[in-house]
Length: 306
Ligand SMILES: NC(=O)c1ccc[n+]([C@@H]2O[C@H](COP(=O)([O-])OP(=O)(O)OC[C@H]3O[C@@H](n4cnc5c(N)ncnc54)[C@H](O)[C@@H]3O)[C@@H](O)[C@H]2O)c1
Image (cartoon, rainbow, N blue to C red; front, side, top):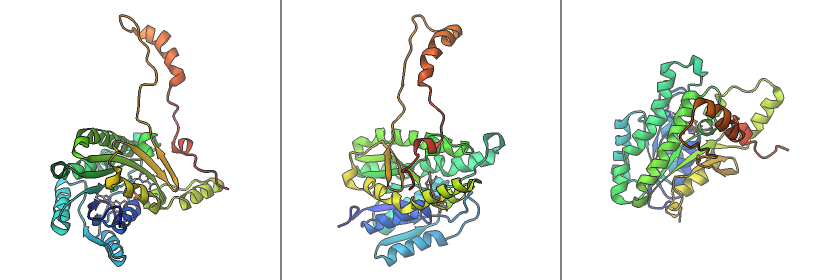
């Protein structure tokens, strides 16, 4: 008995990386899977059918059920087609996982409108397109497991990724509200932020310092893409119904639950604030609680490498 027996899933961007490993574990746990991937390059260029087809072939060779789809999550009509394909081929839809992704890293002052738009189209608009295309079907049947894909780049910040971080933070907000709106219909929505050794991470330049480069290599070796699959498989299962609106980070064997933003301190002044009172009273009181800017290495230093 698999955890997902009798369920139908769509996994986008699953010709490579995290999506591929998750699609394979879904299928190994009994789900029938629509494997979507337009086979584009790391920045969204080109395309091809091989990546999605290879994942389907591997699932079938292992005794599972899967069909390929080559559409783009950046197009709403393509997402509607994925849903139709899941219903036509496998008779329904229960699980949606959306790790489709590209990068167009640039410093903000060098970022073109096209770099911004391309990343928004695939990540943030792609999440709208994909989940919106099926939400009424899931609401009508009163069952669904939605897994959105975020990043520490959005939650914590990462220099050179203003477009990507903004999209990923937007996805965290989207998931939270979709979770609130659909909880009464037995639909959950959670965010998984992976850190894994994939084409996407390999596209980030290696540090020039050989010692730093060796540490990065070792961390990647300990963070294979298949380490993301067990958490996604659990979140996709019926038994995960009590997990809703949450944000998780997974890197290798480290699994973290993230907090949601809350006010950390409040100051109040009778009859309201003046700019001078803000300077003299409010900020001196608040500044000990200022968020310290730090990248994901500070927050996720990882298990020390021996
Ligand atoms: N690998 C990491 O460490 C890491 C860190 C944070 C977040 N993520 C996120 O995890 C997800 C998976 O990333 P990955 O590392 O496996 O990358 P990857 O490049 O290995 O795989 C991404 C796949 O998405 C596909 N894709 C691109 N545009 C698409 C579109 N419009 N429609 C459908 N598919 C499309 C690509 O063809 C590719 O096969 C992404 O959302 C990424 O932002 C990854």
